[in-house]
Image 1: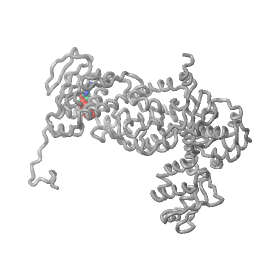
Image 2: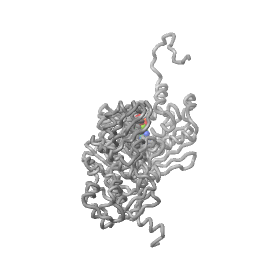
Image 3: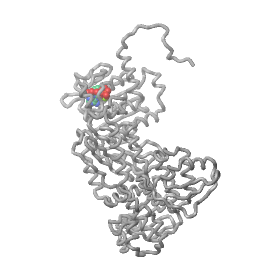
Image 4: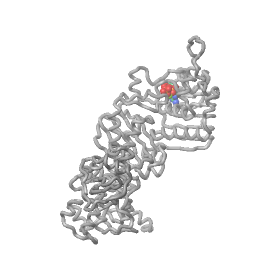
Length: 633
Ligand SMILES: Nc1ncnc2c1ncn2[C@@H]1O[C@H](COP(=O)(O)OP(=O)(O)OP(=O)(O)O)[C@@H](O)[C@H]1O
Ligand SMILES: [Mg+2]
């Protein structure tokens, strides 16, 4: 294939490029498509302190992009500089660049835009008796209120090759609207309106971040999210993270801001993703609106033409901070009412708030969080969390199915303090006897089982419905993880080994990976070239079919290699094993067993979702029931 990049056959003289061409080349990077113009103009309006911004688009922004703000405006004598390349009011030294707190700093956007479109800028400062307008370098008096209107028409009229790369009007408009959403999410203190071809598409009044994000991301997110707010030294992470039930098949509801700037940063995305790993299936994407605020000197924003990527001075500690903050917030979902938003996780709040007050959801929103969510349905019981977190390995055999094996039958059967002691602690035993809902037991006490699938329980708020398979699966999974982490997987030897026919690869895999199988709690021996014998399984999984457990483990070890199974694939593997073992539908449970399940759920981190991100329980408050029956209306 011949290419147009073949070297010149003759040396041509080196010449400085004309200014206009320089701008057009720069525009290639800065003004990639209409949405990039929208972004640059919105950022300028925000940097100018606007509180009301109107965006008017025609034909996907290609025909026209007009952005009207009520910001500071530009003094008439500086108008020519505004559209000149490398002229900016925002920085004036390397030191200022390294500490930049405005969205713009290159002095390039307006120049780039005006090199590929017809740009008219009308502006008026508070002091000026009237507005001024600049178009094609000509300045004339104009009318208008304080603020700036930038009107960009016929994008790429002079660079037709570029214009050909544009997609359909609807697609380009979609990109523009997404840019407006991103910016509106970062600045709930500013009102935004967006219209397309004369029709209003979006309008957001000034509000707090909880409301703005609910409006923009929709009910699905608003009803299943956790506030997050953690600080450590110069770092602060805050916003909302969606519960797994608010996850999506596409990564289109992920909003991450660094010092108020929307970014798509691999490091940050990875940290969040890793924190969700335990509660989200691999093909689901979490939804979130998260802001990381830090001293601007700790992050370089000058690494990408559209500033969408950043570079952190200490990327490792940023990754850890983000991962742990999100992980902690997700872990705290264990004893909170589903659908009710618990109080923000505020571990290690520091008073060194790097923020300069520019981002409104800093400081201000604290009050709105607490006003709205001050009393979570159930306070998280620290001792419960610690208990499950520390993973007491000697007590691992507290599968609730064991209660059944011990012959606990019927409602309210009194068990000895010791047998409960190993299982849920003596305090719980008393509560079980009295069977009265109280806030020590947020999930309440079992009433009955429905169709062999759901457990019905009564708590202080009303009715609790538990998907028993999903809940048990989650509990087993967390227990397996803790046991493996502590290198203390309790093993159950089988009285009669389970033998099964295996192919050569399975036999070979078992023989080569004895150590790994052992650390997982399995003893699988080859007793002939075509027969494997399972002699021991993890005690937590003893109720499952040993053969299918063994086959699953061997398949994972074979496909991913022994050591990877224990690192990268560990959680998937444990999830599969837990799913095999968890109590199946149509298994009838006694009240004692059901209560045991409820107590374990309360003590298990992330018990609100099964490993596949489905909810494990829901609350129906008395209010909800009253409404259903129109009581008191
Ligand atoms: N809406 C506006 N209101 C007030 N001043 C504005 C507005 N838009 C632009 N300006 C002024 O014009 C200058 C040039 O804007 P331009 O967007 O080209 O560069 P910048 O914002 O400084 O940097 P960047 O290229 O990174 O965006 C700004 O520094 C600012 O002083
Ligand atoms: Mg700018």
